[in-house]
Structures are given as structure tokens and as C-alpha cells.
Image (cartoon, rainbow, N blue to C red; front, side, top):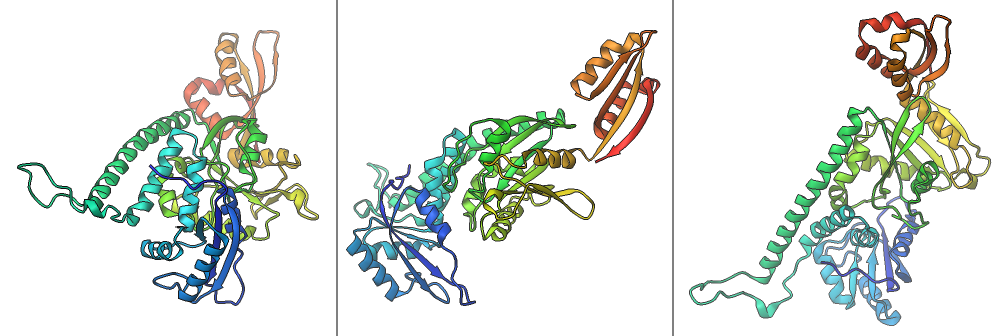
Length: 435
């Protein structure tokens, strides 16, 4: 339904600073977004204002200056690092005589190019439709009113009304299809909950290295790139974590400052994996001077999708680019791992990350020695093998099996409940080991 902006288009970039502390905002991220969209920067126009101009956003003088730059440079498009109102966008297009794109439209365009799966394409189109709903104009003046045939006299329906009606119907169709996808995902989540398989979700600022970490752990071969929003469609893989067993690792879309609300709403089904995760791995680019601002931006989005209360482990990535940084685990006042310093590309600290994941997912481990009678060996041994908890085993002369097991407190209580009171007769000794 949409004309995507083509790679190689000549773009004039506009960044207006509204800060009051006298410093300049960093617009390198804006340039990275434009580069990720495949457009070529002709010139960057900067300025400073106390508040946006109601008609042109940048003020009349600056607007005419940009118009001259567009004409001289032969630019195809002007991109603003801000959110424009529909009227401002129309006024600027009329003045510049070329396309005008704001930050929201730019991010939506990148997402439209990157979507690969059926669900991803639906989510992007939904966000685009919601964004364009406020920007419909009547460009068909010769069809001001659609007339009915004989016997259907009346004012008819204006072209603008027709566009709005078609848009509403398309949104409803997409929402129905996304509901089906959401139900399928919910079934998968319920199955994992019934099997009590924990889910670890990768979150973080875009281009922090989430997909690279995901590939390193799972060998999935997910597309990675130095561009922003290289990952759009979520990917789930099963991994093995010591003392935990089967664990689902989910790679999700990266976040960014001023992420469009329409996009967050459209990707709600995908972000549900983050909301209902057992543990979040918040991947951070430690080499970025603005990493604290990036952390704050991610936390804002996590709060918006109601995932801010999920237990989180910070992963400081790219330490090979940080002077005097080495792989290590930082713990909070209770001795629980809170930050892990790693470098995925340099293959440093991955073992420490798994160690921290084990501690955060498991909590309390328990060790037991069991003495199983010959009549119960086959049944009990198969159950213990499925739990992957056997440390040592040996047979006694009378046919009894002595077996040492190590498993989580939760798995132990579940096993005792299934076996009933007779299970207590199997226990020789026990001791708790708290990690």
C-alpha cells in the first residue's frame, strides 16, 4: 500500500536543538538512521529554537534557507530529526517542492524495508496506517463527491471520506490477522509454561550487539549488521543452561530514543515475549559514550510495554573497544549477579554470562543421595535422566541403586509431589547449596 523511499535518494537532513543548557544534542544517531534507510546525505542543516514554529517547525527564515539548499543541491527529500504535525509536513512540502519525512516516518520506512516475516510485515503496515491516518488529504478535487446512479441521488461520499473508510477497514483486517498470530504465540508460551521452560529475552538499544550474541550462543545465523534495526523479526531458539536445562532464548527488535508509539503498539504481540520472559538480558554497547542515555531509553520502552518489573541482567558488550576493560561479573549487595562484562566478537566472557544466567535462573540448588530399590530403578532412573540431574551412580550387592543428584529446589519439590509419600523412603541424605 505504500511507496517506500528508494535507496540512493539525495537527502537534506534537518536537526533543530531545543535544549536550554547551551550544549548541542548529538545527531550522529540521526545520521545513522538515514544511512540505514539507504539514503545519501547531501547536507546537514542545524539550528536552535526555544519552541517549534507552528507553520514550518523551523521558523520562516530557516525554512526558506532549506528551500534554497534543496533547489541548489537537487535533493529528492528533506528529513527532520523530529516529529512533525500533518499541517507542518504539508506546508514544508509545498515550500520545498519535494518530499518531507519526519523521524517517525523514517523509522517506519526502515522497518518496512527490513520486515521479512508475515507477522513483521503486518505489524509494520499497521503502524504505517495509524501514522498516515492523520495525514490524509483530498488530492482528488475532480472527484469531490462520488455520485450514485439513478435512484441513488444524494451528496455521495467525498474522496477523503472514502480513503478514511478504506483505511479503517484495512486496519481492522490487519488487527484480525495479528490476533490469530498472537493466539498462536500464546499457545507456544502456554506450552512452555506447562513444561516449565524458562524464557530469556534479549533487549537493548539498537546496534548494541544482541543478534551477534544470539548467534554466538545458539548458532542460529540471524542476520547481523552495523546498521540500526538490523533485526526486526523475533527469533526463538532452545539453549542448554547448566543446572537449568532447556531454556528458550528470544532475540527481539532493538529500541531507540523517541520510538514511535504507533510502532510500539503495532509490535505488542512480538514484545509480549519480553513482557512474559523469566529473565531479560539487557545488552549494552559499553564503547558508546552515551550508553547511560541508551539504558534510560530502553527502560522507558520497557515501562511502556509493562516489562520493567521482569528480572534483568545487564550485559556490557564490546569491551574489546573499551580501554582497561576485562570480562568479569559485578554483583549487587546481596551477592546476586547484576552486570556481566563481555565481548561477543572477541569471544570474551561468554562463559561468565552463562554462569550469571545460571545463578539468576536457578537461585537455590539442592543435592541429594537416593537409594532406589530394584523394582523402582527403571521408572525413577528415566525420570532423573530427563531432569539431567545425575552426578554419580553405583549399584550395591543387593541390587539397590545409589545415585547422587543435583537439581533446582523447584524441580525437587515437583518430583516429590509426583512420587508421593513413598519417595521419602528413597532419600539417604541431603544438603543444600545456595548459589
